Image (cartoon, rainbow, N blue to C red; front, side, top):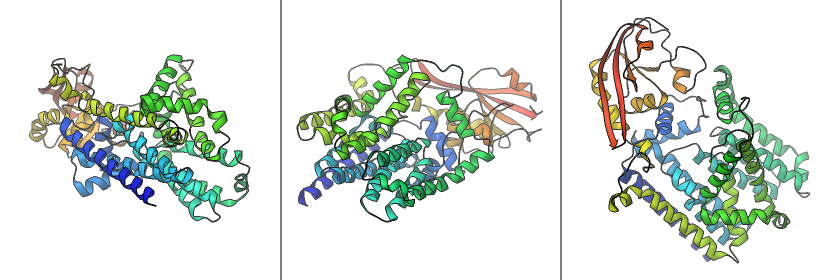
Length: 484
């Protein structure tokens, strides 16, 4: 019991220190929101059952956080920052249940130190609730298999449903769970019982409002998912280079040393398969990894699309190596933490060593300059309070809306299939006769100006960031919209 409490307390302290440190790093870096964060914040101001590219949980989390702490950058990022240590705690419980307290400790510590978590820990994303729901669903599933009754099965189904409402990748949990039941003679009996199937129905019921929202909006989230994965696109083929990039991304996401240990463990899979706990974790790693690898080989796959495999990976690596290769685990976590500190403090390192930050060597450039850019646009908005704010693309709209809170805004969308949430839910078709402030990256907009009775270039806003990088927009007053 003492060892149990000591490990749990040590992990909790480390997780708290890392979380507090990441909060400080966000402030220290002086970065603004990334485009997706500003985009999600906009969703949180109009809660719904779905959005163009994602289900609604991320918006609900931001809405809850900002309702308590205001609309500051930290408040928007806070849900992810808190969810990651919660996931580490679940991994600790899983490790203790499957193996031992030591395995649970190293699983939680490995997760908190992962480069993937270190990177995602600086901004709010859908991966945070997805990974928490995946780990909780696995915990409830294992508990359900150990006892008769309904409670854990229903908890598992509800968690899967919330996970699906976070990110559709959660659907991959179901075939792995089915494999776990089908391949284990002792658990196969559950396939003839109602509990697993009721759990699936509960998950579907929780997802149902999002499915209905998609149906009423012509399935934009599914169209977007098909588009980014190139499903149904003619250009699908063999892309070995993309597969190599994807596999490399998985290795770096877990960390250089821990990634090697995972590869080592997977190579030992035939031997590990004989042990039930190892087999369970392999079932929740290999199928999803193989599926997304095939997607990378034949189309396109982002590095985080297989992120749920790291729940089981963070358990499998210490389970296999903690007894005989503990130094490797220590080295893996240490390397990850040193790399994270180096990435967090790269601007400080560059300044101290005389390296000038540029567009090529600043990893945070995408989150710089937006507040100053919006503040430069603000005087034009204040001078024309009756005008509708319109911007050239999703990135500009998201940051301008976050900073300026305009009374009215919309995307310029003459027709065709919407490519973002602004085009989906805003319209100018019923705004004939209205004046608009159009914010563009281009100095001239003749094709747009011809849709108005008159146009005037009000000014230019420039925000220098590096010697080779700046944010620059032009603001136009367009009067008397004649319609598309």
